[in-house]
Length: 130
Image (cartoon, rainbow, N blue to C red):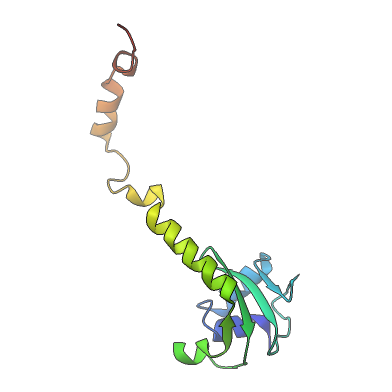
């Protein structure tokens, strides 16, 4: 079975074209070697891939030509213990130190706000004179 089809059937990517795109960018390795989308996958192969900016290592347990429910898709692979520990550590880091850009709620300043910022004399405000 083709690698891109398997990644799609195992629900790592929403579409086959997204799976092929990630494989083309070199983000998927099969048994330690960078793979192509047409690479044949068989049970026992070990895949290293980046899924949602998280490196994951999975072992192929089964093949499926169809994309089924999530429960069936999870039976197609087994994630390694190291990968699970790394994912837990990554989630904990994100919880403790969220992305700074996610805290921006106001967006870009309006024209009026920009003009108000331009009127502020920043040198006088931050001058360290006694």
